[in-house]
Image (cartoon, rainbow, N blue to C red; front, side, top):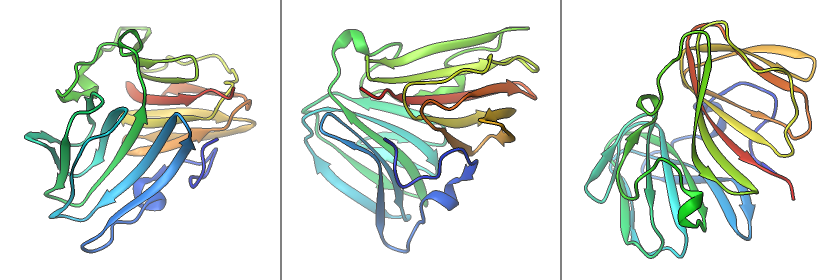
Length: 216
């Protein structure tokens, strides 16, 4: 389902989307009737005018400095706006971020307040000899959650029913994608293709955000 981004390959942001002088650039990663995910690049001192939207909007800043109304967000910070809430976006530095638009019920939003920024790396702690995870959004067909791996800890090889976007937030990990082993570190991302064996094993303490879109 994910498009406009290579699958099974570790990428830096600069490889996925450019930042053009004086421009706003958007790239569709998911474009469904009830869900869209955009990767967006804004040059410094550019903005998106305030508007109302008919669905919840989740924004995750990957790089730069953005202001959503009066709330300033930096790298690895996230904010959720409820439907029919007016807000605008301003970039004070060259910035790249994810926009996720989806209709959510109250019980599908986990551990996140509307209209308040959260620092993702502060949302869960490392546990010695263990893997910790916390849900942010949980629908049958769409999930967003955080994971923290102690050094040396990892998942057993498995498959997912949909494409899974992994955003490395902190540390370094070794990945298995099919029969290929690769490494990922903070600031990089990868898409695990649907129905392909994969796993994650932390080389150092490692935190990541995972966005899973389940094939119906």
